[in-house]
Length: 116
Image (tube, rainbow, N blue to C red):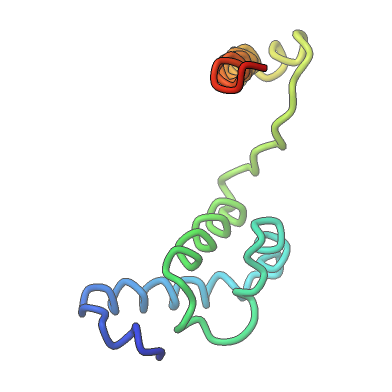
């Protein structure tokens, strides 16, 4: 452990140990490297996890559990859809409009700030 580990409280050490145990289990899955590569956390596939940041451990566990859980289907990559796609994918109804509205709001804000 590094010097910051000495300052951790007992609950912090317990949480870290739980994360390390769970990530160690998840790293054994054949697709774990692929998932962590996609999440830009592939460095967690190598070596010990005891000194890894807790935030990296928790994010890696989140991505692995969501991607590898057999009852969950990975979400598709975000892309704008044609109107007839919404009929085929009713769960995305309104998403495109929300994205365009948000982009327009940010563009208006940028123009107001920068005078562009």
